[in-house]
Image 1: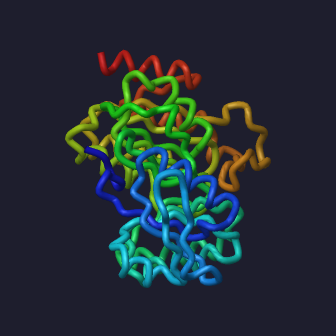
Image 2 (image 1 turned 90 degrees about the vertical axis):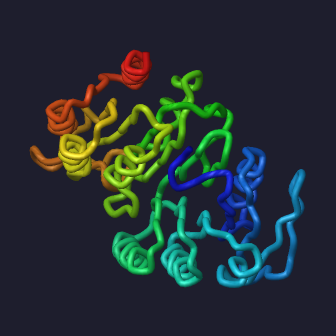
Length: 292
């Protein structure tokens, strides 16, 4: 099985006809994703030819969903329009919205997350690489060739780059689903959401949780693991050498005083029974040892 995204998912791409949308639509199709439509109000009625599929372009998400039964959308639109894109998808009844766009204003993210949640739409991101269920579907920008093999590991990560590295190092073990939730201060789907989904997925035997400095998401995930997760969890925290008060890479990756430090997060996870690697490679070895 997989979480959130399967071979049955019908995917549309908002912003498909832009440079990034075209590039990643081609890559998603090559990975086996069932992309059924693009959305661009200025290019409605066109059809875009890819290597083995012609994808129609609609003016609105509602029109695309009605014509294709799409249930997932990937958003490749500029930051000022990302909020409107999510709202439009939620109004159209899309169940999963993957927001790749980075640089989305925090107040926009707060607003569209609340709007989507009230309508039963799950948002992943913004500023995320998306998610992949190897052998089934790929919604976002995760390179499919680093982990083409299905397996027994579930992965949830704030960091896109570390998602790629752990998937590559564990490519022979394989994954049910890897979810890049994004590193902005306000995101839709959290570590806890993914932990709950992996706990309920019969094919996931082990979960890897990748966190980073800033905020308290990892501490809250540790408390959830202690209370609710029965499967083994392996962790990694990025940012042990980050200087206090400086944003590191992601907008949410900032240490202020003793809050949000990598050390505090590691201690919280270890107290919940999570084995935490000191490097990505060690984290992969811990996972392999646990799988046996």
